[in-house]
Length: 456
Image (cartoon, rainbow, N blue to C red; front, side, top):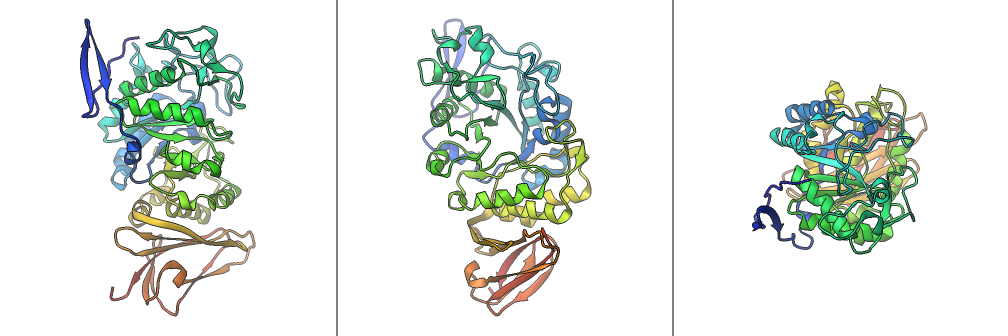
C-alpha cells in the first residue's frame, strides 16, 4: 500500500528516490515529547459508550458537539477506542470467536469499512482525521501492543525490511483478555515494525495514541520501541499507556517515555471505583507533570450505549458523587477523557465539563499534595503556578449516612493570612480566619475551594 506522508514539522525533509517521493524526517530530540501536552490532555473517548463497536457517524457527532460546546474550555481530543479494525465485533465484550480483521500487506490494521466508510481506497483514518482537524480538534486512536496473530500466521513482511512478522513475536505474556496480538520481542525487525505503525498513523494525521496492555506487567522494552518509533515518525503524537496499575517502581521510566499512564483498571460509574482510585493515587502525587498519572475515563453522562458494563444508561453516580469525581480528577491534574456520549449530555453534565475556574485550576496548578486520607476524610491541595493562589479539595468518602465535618489547618495549605474563600462549584464566598478551615459534607460529597489573601 502506497502511503502519502504529510509534512508536519519544520525538521521534515522531502527527498526524491527514483520516480517516487519519500518523507525523510529528522527525529525529535530526546524528551521533546513532554512539550506536546504541556497541560493534561482533555478529550472524548468512545469506549465507555460504544465499547469496540463505535462507528464513524458516532465519532463525528461527538466531534461536532465538542467543537460547539467544549472546545472553548480546552477540550480538544476525539479518540476512537479499541478494535476499530474488526468488522464484526460486538457489544458487552469482544468477538474472539470469528473476528474479521482488516489489515494491509505489512500486517498493520486498517479501519473496518463497514464502520468507517471514509477509509475506502486505503485512505485509512485520514479522512476522519481531516474532518476532526477541520473542527479545530485533534484525532486519536487506540491499539493493542504487539504484532497481530494473523500477520504472524501469514508471515507478512515488515515494511522496508527483509524480515517477516513471524520473526519478531513471542507467545509469552500475550494479553490475557484480548488475544488479537502477540508480544513483540527485541529481534531484528521488531523496531522496524513499530516504526512502520507510527509512520502509517502519522500519514493519517493521528495526534494521540492510546496503547493497551503495557502496564501490568510493565513492558519496558516495548514502551521504549514505541517511544523511538513516535520520535522518528515526524509527527508529534501524544502517547497514553493503559491500563493500570502501572508499577510505582517504574515511575521514572514511564515519566521519561510517555505523556500519560494509567494508575488503575477501568473506572466505571460506581463509588467504589473512585475511592479505590483515590487510594492508589496516594503513591503518584510526586509524579504529576510534565507528564501525567491518568485516572482513566470520566464515566459520566450517557454511557454503555453498546458498552462493556451494563445497559444503556445515564451514569449511576449521584450528583454529589459526580462532583467528587470531577473534583478529584481536576485537582489531581489527571488527563480528562470524557466517556459519555456527548450529544446526549444534559445541562448538569455539561456544567461539570465547562466550569472555567475549575478548569483553570486543572490547567495552571502545581505542587499537588494530599494532606490526609483517613477516617473517611480526604484533603488535597495545590497552588496556582501563575497567581500563587491556593486550592483545597475536601471529600467525605465515608458511607456513614450522617454528614461529616472536615477540618484543615490552613498553614498546611500554605496560608498564613486572612483569606477570601470561594467554592469553585457554587461560587459561594466567605472570609476565612483563625488558621482553620472546615466544611460539613454529606456522604460522598466534596468541596472545592480557592483561597485569596485579603488585601493581597
